[in-house]
Amino acid sequence: MLAYCRRMAKKNPLIRPLVHDLHAYVPGEQPKIKGLIKLNTNENPYPPSPKVLAAVKAAVDGRLRLYPNPTAETLRAKLAKLHGCQPENLIIGNGSDELLALAVRCFVEPSPKSKILSPRTVVQYFTPSYSLYPVLADTHGAAKNAVPLKDDFSVPGVAELRRGKQWRFDAALTLVTTPNAPSGRGYQTVELEKLCRAQQGVVVLDEAYVDFAKENALKLALKCPHVLVARTFSKAYSLCFQRVGYLVGHSELIAALDKIRDSYNVNGLGQIAAEATLDDLKFYHANFQKIIATRERLARELTKLGFRVLPSQTNFILAKPPLFPASAWLEKLRARKILVRWFGTPAVKDFLRITIGTPAEAAALVKAVRAVLFR
Ligand SMILES: Cc1ncc(COP(=O)(O)O)c(C=O)c1O
Image (cartoon, rainbow, N blue to C red; front, side, top):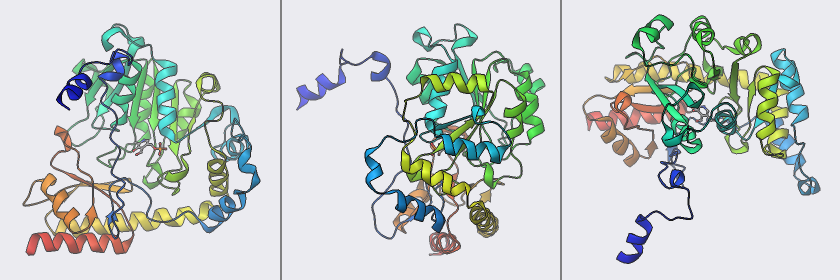
């Protein structure tokens, strides 16, 4: 056994050193424990609309033997109509994660030893933000430039970034999570526009949570030829299981991304589910309002119990709990069958990230918090 472990610790020459040394992305836990309230992965607490479920069920027949439409043509046409652009301004992915990975492969040169040798090799992002970005850069052998947000998780202004000297206005690719995750902070389009206009490389505005926010920056993708906006059906549209996301942007960037994607990257049932979603947007707009109302109520109740809850424009909140370290709260809540998320990174290690569930789930969380505090 010991010999086996030693062999495994040595680098297997069949595997590229870059892959051997890679720290893979760690997704939130998907536990099978019965009765657990799952507030850890920012899924939507409400199921897809009955019309979406009916459309998917109706498509489960002999068609499963056929390849799906390779360019998700109908879905792109519907999205183009919704966003006031052309289908050529849209590419659909197997979740927006796939499109973020494609953007790294499409716009960034790998770099020997992942060092910043030229701006063309740089993937740039703020910290904290979506923890997938560094993994995508490492997988590609690109150089990373991780620049801290301000203490209140706001984006530093352009003049401030220039003074700080670490930010690269020439980075090949800049990824901005807006609204931010894991803080939940929303950003104004005017400030994002100033940042975008100062960048020479491609900027992806990752709007995974934007349906819960006050504004979105889609118009920047339609007026700046180097800006792409990433959206997903996972969070606001209750379709994590189906894996559908998209990018909006200039047709030249979209065509370049299209060249390097897998031919059938979006599965057929996913396309059907997303199309039916767009035919029933009213249903989802009502869900956004319910989730936002629960978010605000939960924030008030946790604040009364001594939590420092940061303002959120997403379907989760970042909250600093009282009395015990956040990591201890994670265990205490889990013992009471409530699963939330804790990140051990310096900027957020004192906080819990809590997905907004149904009103009943929020009430159960408050009850569990009271039990921890007053037992
Ligand atoms: C900021 C951000 N972007 C993108 C994604 C990926 O979403 P998708 O399910 O579309 O791959 C997530 C998922 O957690 C996210 O938090």
